[in-house]
Length: 226
Image (cartoon, rainbow, N blue to C red):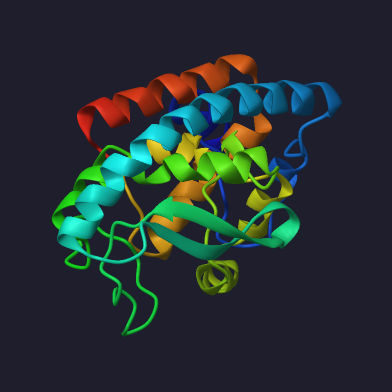
């Protein structure tokens, strides 16, 4: 069956285009008590280390942002988290201050709204470091589905069956979808990422956590971020 093939060989969960077969959802559930304790332990250690990096990194980042796009060093935006509840997600700013003057847009490769240093911190994922604060506040995990804006969530839930399932766990700074799929520019990409997110939730283990971290480090080293 296609579901078994995708999970075994591509490490992603099949998402049908209709409501006919929902069996694949049966074993997709929130983390149990022990899993959650392990996740939170990893979160505290990982986010604690990132916070130390953030403390020193912000001076370097501020210097270059002020040089190329004067304004706030941080970009704060409402994102959808656990059970669909919104929270304020924080990142280093990589786009011009007027990036959304024409409305919300997908972030894409070679985005003209991104200034030069902004492109560098996006490719190296340095822009994500301040989200360690969100993790320490309990709004995010170190690893999990990436948090999206309500605008895109509303759109995707109309076009992609079971998209809401990714909100049964907290979002993450990095995730299985982020290290296996290059970037999202439309609903098709969002569906592909959902398949990886659901696989991560369904098959969560310490090994998968370590594997995701290792792949994240490779993405950073190769500057494969968007």
